[in-house]
Length: 580
Image (tube, rainbow, N blue to C red):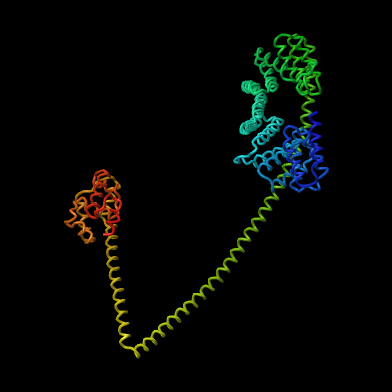
């Protein structure tokens, strides 16, 4: 009834909208929203859209339609038979899609190869899907990423590689938790139990399946909780823990939802008959055990189930001491094993051929990639060389042009200077002839201006001498020695201070005289602090050299600033002293 309702919705949508771009986008968005819950309906919807309006759709809409259709087909368990469409879709999204769309396309291409029996290519596509995922993005589809790892685990399970299977299931569990997909996370954890069972690690199998059964029940998944205990019935029998075996069997039968009204288990789960038979055999309920062993032997065409049934009957008749029946079922078991080995070989050879063809394809593709990369490198190198030659030519042309321009500018400058001097000479001659007094006054003004300029030069020479003296003091031996003492944390001696003040009085005469003036009444320590400030010593160095605290140095600096410049505090002291 619900399926019919969605078909009616589809019909209404088709009637409401024309063949416009907006109509196609609306249908695609609606299909995407139904994908997780009603994949069958989405298949019908998209097939109808593709049949009726594909010619009116843009390329992006067509690619999105095929991507959604492939996703619906995968969720509806409809096997893929060709990879042509998904290869085109994947190539499109690799060029034009987001990281999430690229991951989804490669995942579905892997599902296509999975259904076509090409496990190596399926595994490669799953790896590509993982590489395309942007796990740093806030909108990363962690649920899809979890499914990718889950599908990789299935491939490793089919190849009997339990260690690889466990690794991928751990990744699937991790990303399911990140996606807040509780059911997916518990399922990934639960599937690890079967991998540990293949490794004969029964303790880990028990821990995992008991916990997953508890988690399923805790979150309301009662059927999954019961089914998780199905595998443990066999494990507990092997460990001779019959009480727990009974608990698992009864829960599985009562709540697992796998039996019909006649007590027959659903197809594919017949091995449970063997597990229950082994439990009954361990409880010495031989008639009941034989019933379930024979039911295992006769159920379906799965040779593995028939082998299990034969083994169960062999154990039963060994307990009864019936050697004829033991021989009968041993021969039957041997024949079944031979048939199973033959089937395995027939299944393995095509896979080996597929792997061989795939490896040849990869080698050929790698060879072509290397050739393309070599040609690309040659083009890049050629381009760089061409660019270098062109750049050199342009540089030479610009340099010659600039040199010619500089020569022309210099010629113009010399001409202009000569012309200016000529005009001035003509003007001077005219003034000399016309107005001697006026000319004399002008020359007197010019002489005064030149005298002031010379005075300024003389002042600059004095400033230069002062600067040279300060530079000498900054780099003299006693100053370097004081810095070294401070660096080693050692105080200065009296001889050090005497040498410093003596050198200051010789090279910074005015500065020393100013500090020693009686009206300022500076102490000897205050004079030395002034000299150290002038020579760019830090307060921390002064404290070490005077063997006192930084607070004492601060107090001395405050006193100096007040005595010399009548200013409070220490902020202006350095500037004031350096200006002396």
